[in-house]
Image (cartoon, rainbow, N blue to C red; front, side, top):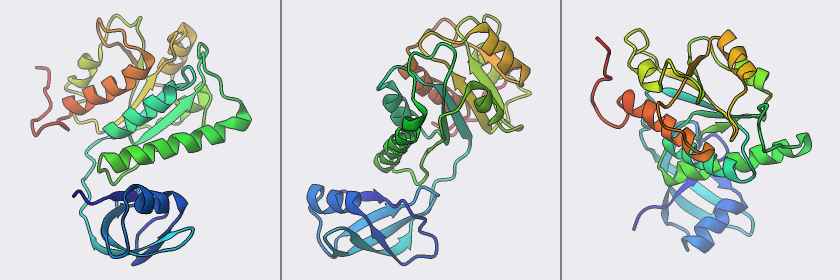
Length: 257
């Protein structure tokens, strides 16, 4: 039997005992039907994971005793996904897939052509929901790191969130000069470890938005002849980056001569 794996919303550093709330209680006791003394694995999303034992169940919580630390997998690259808010429901799929693939940060933002709109009073609830989806994705994929979901941003604020050392890419179907392959195999960029990628809404970006991004140092790129649906694009692009950086194998990245 596979040992169940659960997420602790609190950091586990320097702890030997931790108490988890109703969600984990229900999962361990009712879904997995575990009992006192059973073994589990627990991770905190900050890179720490432990072998552990269930010490006790109460009406509202479960007490866990931490054991041996499980060595975490080192992250070789960092990917921030800035995703324009799509139609209702699609963001759940985007977050799930991007988190499963190991995106470090997801920044939801409003674009000029965004069909989906989130009222200010509901944005924090949406972010909480997406963060929970990201946590579940990490649990299922045996990752000790959880994708961070940032607050819903404006287009301008999202651009400002990109760090100076990141390779900044904005995906635009009208770009005819550069593809993602061109950029990722450019010998001057081959050592890049930090990526900030922007993906638009169903209707794509306006030319004003592209100009604004280019003025902030972003490179506009395309997927060549491929035009993907908004809920497919992020997973495809993250996978392409990881493949070209050798995450799916032990080979070195291909470099243009």
